[in-house]
Length: 350
Ligand code: MRU
Image (cartoon, rainbow, N blue to C red):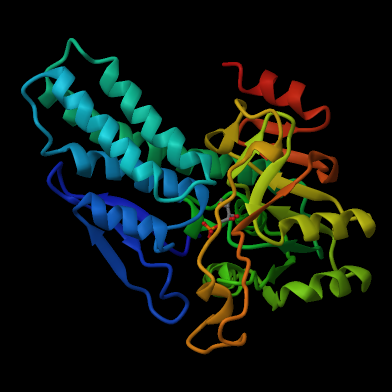
């Protein structure tokens, strides 16, 4: 069912993180074996590994890679290296909270283990990173079970960007619903927004759904209003990079427009959010740091200049959708409906 292994650890503690280089898809399937932390930082920054949960897994393995040969004389000396590694990996991308959640998890593990030897702590870091991956697989599956209940025979669903297997270690967050519904024998179609400027919808979502045999139609982002107006869409499901306490959430640029359209056309709009993407420390979406990326992603898309030389370009990579546009939040523990803050806090209590 899962068409691809996005990220995995290969070998023992001296081994490598193997990830599919997503910048090359759909034209080439090539794996990158990461053995040093600078290469992991670059892979996250350049979107070779991307999508919030996959970034979290990559960062967890990145911590192990950074620390496996760190000084081992004392716990204090090792903790200096832990903080440096966290600080470095955290600087790769600002929006997906999974990155900070994963590096924090490893940092806390090391900090709380002062009675263990540094060698023991190093071994436990790799085990923890693998646990981050394993838990992600389980969370994806659970979100898929909940999400699939909304998909009926004959439906067509729209998604934006790639919140798929390629964005996680498992079956994806938003696309998990599609994979589980397919497994349960329902027939439906997915419309994938192309997702300018880096085309994660056309390059990645369309690729993985096609590999899995889920019928998929690619549209350019500016066609979403028309397909909705034509009555072709029964529901929308997207992923998130960070969902706040009140339910506001960041996702790939263009998600907000899709949410507004869905409301206008009376179409249910869901976000799939594993607990690793939920940031209850932020009360609302205005507090989410939004990554701005380089102008060339807009002006020199894929090998050719499409805007005049020297023209100003604005390239925010994410937008924030206010919770009022949400029908429900799909988490690995269940479906949360408004009022979201009460539901989210209740759900994350244990
Ligand atoms: O810039 P990207 O490709 O990392 O952006 C990814 C998204 O916006 C995804 O929708 C989000 O991370 C959720 S992935 C399950």
